[in-house]
Image 1 (spheres, one colour):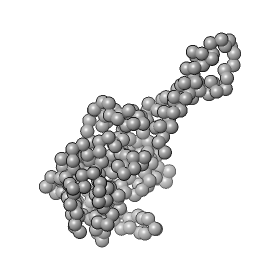
Image 2 (cartoon, rainbow, N blue to C red):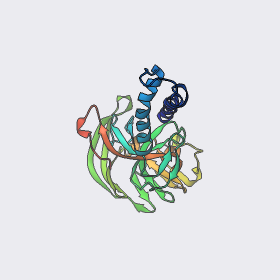
Image 3 (cartoon, rainbow, N blue to C red):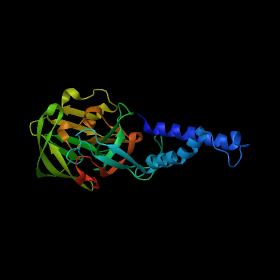
Image 4 (cartoon, one colour):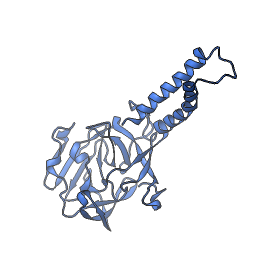
Length: 268
């Protein structure tokens, strides 16, 4: 569901009714006359819809985490806030950037439109910037020839799809300025070769084998991976994220119905 489009249509309809009544149909109405019901509703809802539209289009937008691909950083059911202006001001609905402010940084947790279906919003971590050489082999991440340090942090157990009990090993990992925790499953392969899309844009920039992959990120694109490395549908399978698909940077958990202690946590 394109909520931005729904809001825009509601804004145009209510604003249009109010404007027509002010300029045309309401001209001869007495000052103390009761407004027609439709006009009354339009005048009441237009300012509210306008405020919500501006807020979520240009400042902050809420999202709900639907999957475990970002565990343990983000849990299923977390409600997060996304900064909509940090990476530039974009026109709502068409998502076209009109003011350039900043670029995504390596390690940012970013919401973007899924390249294969832009009606879907995904959330992953920025691993590769334009021009980067990203390698992931035998569960180790290497960027531009430099291996990313991993320090063992412990275990994280959760129930996966099909009620499977997952025992993950967690590691402290630093990408850019972000020190976060990534998780792997020792018995899982670094990449499931049969799930790799064979024709995503710039597919020739990537090579795969049983140990993992190497990708060169093209200009204007980003390479995204989930923190739950062995349970994430990400760039290793469907390719790079173009700049025009960026929604914003996730920065805070504002609600979780099942775990109140997570409320107010900033996202690293």
